[in-house]
Structures are given as structure tokens and as C-alpha cells.
Image (tube, rainbow, N blue to C red):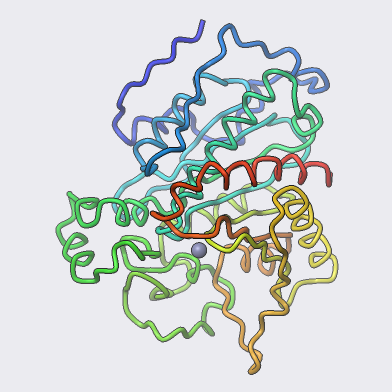
Length: 348
Ligand SMILES: [Zn+2]
């Protein structure tokens, strides 16, 4: 019997549950062919992840704990590192750890785009429900997803709570107040735009911001930030078949990369097509986004995954607005994206 209790937890307690996502395959049956059918819940848990209002870091951590308890055979979680302000960065695995292919997803690397977290957390819950009832069995048997639902928890907390998000760091609170632009904040708590901090094309980035800011500062050096280190480490921990990065806004999928091999260009395009076919989003090849002078801004997660790791990656810009305007559309954004993971799994 599963008793669903909603107990407020201290942040770091939640992710102490499990040491590492990828070591959990021992918990699963070796024969995956009928594993989904064998998983039967004694009760059907009520919905865990809510869609209606602003989704905070604490709510996400609580939901991850509840999801791992409600669906222990298909959902597991780990911490991939800690932010500068000490928040644990969770990774949630959905599916069969013995699946021959894995895909890494990360969301909300840009703070103000925090509805991305709510969307992928709801997707995790729905796929968990489907797997335990035997739906999407092909996906279950072939592809599992490792999802970092909130890559920038300090930044998201700044957008949602301002300087109050840093109660134990007066210097950070002062920096937040002095910088302003709270609702437009994209950076982490150190004022670094994490999607300009990856170790690819970093030296060439020049967007006119040379000190910590709410957006576009690339950092003092490549991979200078704890969140970047954590994401790079997770991305290299497994030979992932593909990488997906969720941003807002535009209802568009950016794929491919200047400098890609022909093979990687084709693989990136195939992932983008799978997402487009089920979401209805447009596709745009990043090779077509090079400026007249040949400049291209890199330093992002998917730039790095494609050029440094040599694997396919796509950036999905969900929705038509940013929060808070986009909050009323969160459920429809989720519905547009829900079946994209199942579609991607058909590529393998
Ligand atoms: Zn973004």
C-alpha cells in the first residue's frame, strides 16, 4: 500500500535518497521484455506535480521525493551537485535503467524560464503512470531519460523571491538588489549566464556584458560555475544518445550546430523532427543563424554537447510567452510536449 503523504522536507534531505541515477539498474529485473507489465501499483497515486501556480524549487524537491516513492520501479533521483548557495541540483531518471539507450534532458538553465521545470516534471509523472500500466512499453524497453528539471535553482529562486532567496548570503542579497531586473533574471546567483559558460567557443563570446549581471555575462572563465560543472559531469557520465535543453520561448526547436560532423548534423535533425512531429513546433537549423560576419555565439549546453562530446543535441523553446504571463498556458505547453519523448524513443 502506498500512502501518499505530503510532508514538507528540508531541501537537502530529499536528494539524499539515492547516490547515483545510473547505479540503480540492480533494482530492476534483468529481463526488460515484460517488465512494464509486471509492475502493478497497489493504489493509483493522485497527481503529484501541480500545474496551476508558480512552481518553486522546494515544491520540485518535494515532488521528486513523492514520485520516487510512488513509482519506485520507474523513477529514481540523485544529486549532480550543489549551487553556490548550497541548493542541491537533482537529476530524475524516468524509465527502465536497463534500457539500451539513454537521453539526457536539462531544463531551466535560464532562471526566468522556470515553467520548463513544471513541464518536464509533469512529463515525468505521466510517463511513470504509463509505464506502470504497460503503456509506452516500446519506449520503456528501449530508452530511458535522465532529466535535470531545474539546472539553475538559485536563479529560479531569485526570479520568484528576489533577494529573499538568499537568506544566508547577505552579499548575494545585496548583489540581487543592486542588479535589479528580477523578473528578467537569466543568470545564476553569481550573475553568470550559465548558457554562455560551457567550454565551447567561450573565448569568442562578446555580448557586451563584462561583469556579473542578470543576463549574458559569460563568467570569469569557461566552466567557472558549479552548475556548469555539474551538468558537464552528468553529460559525460554516460554515452547519451542525445541531449535536450528546454528554454522559453518561441515554439521552436533549434538543432544542428556550425562545426558539426555530417553524421551529427543528421542525428540532431532526426531528434528535432521527432519533437516537431508531435509538438507542432517549427524547426530551425543553427547553421542558418550565423551572422553576416560569420560570428556565432556558443558557450551553451547544446553547443558543447554537439561539438565537445560529438553527440546530437537540440534546444526546445517552449511556449509563446515568458513567466508570469506563460503560467496560464503551462498546461497546454505540457500537452504539446508530452508525447515528444515517446516520439524520440522511436528513433532507436
Ligand atoms: Zn533560455
